Length: 175
Length: 180
Image: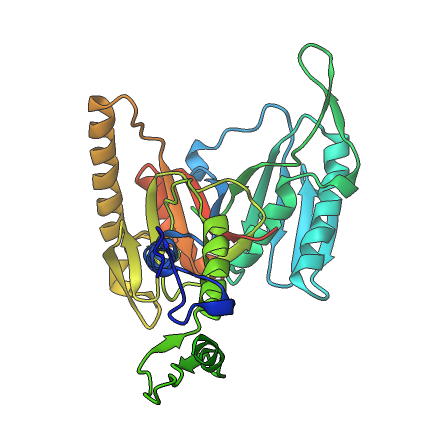
């Protein structure tokens, strides 16, 4: 019987060809698969930045006179700009539609105020973390379907904006 | 003789018995059909290698907590983690404020904040600041990653956020599972 490295002949030989020696391959699989199952991270955890509003005594008025506030309750969200109500968004169907309605209102605000990046959220007691995070997601990034929002930078050159209001502050923590 | 062996080896169920030799002896040789197993292992290996990330993961999901979904692409930094679990509040894996029936005990609250949590956070801040003095690559930024259940109401979060703010942690990051 002929012997070669990594290959062995079928015991019977004949017309059935050679069998590959699969033992080293199996050894490798058995070592690699448990290692990868243990070390691989299938769930990607990301974070959403949020600032906390300062205690009332430390609050200073914004010099640019821009105060965009979203008051969130379990069933509605009220958007105000400098105290003027821009819209009251009722939660009619699912959460995603609600967040996207808020996003559209905020895109309109951004078009009028391309230099502003700050937004404050004031959730009421029963509002869940998922709702807060969903709203923050809707307020943070510009989407391709929103169209282009252009602003001029310090040199006077046109810059295409990527963000809506990424500077999110949570209000009502100290009250 | 060899043909007889080969045909017997291809019997069903992946287990082939050794064939009878011309001499009438029953062979004791049996072989497993490994092809389906190797196929499966190859698929698993390719999937796992594809999912394998070389980026360090500073956050891992905590048992019993269903994290919120987020479209944020910001990866969790290597900062202090506060977990609001079902049994209580944990900092760096250590239980700091125990819960009763899933909420903070009234005895743990004082003036709208949690003194035990504040003490632990202040100690952690002092420790980080001390390390930052010795090691310029470390900086105290007042960042705290909050890992909590998606159904946690804001009223339960408020005393925790307030305490974190008073202890010097003003930069809060809410952890969530990435969903495109």
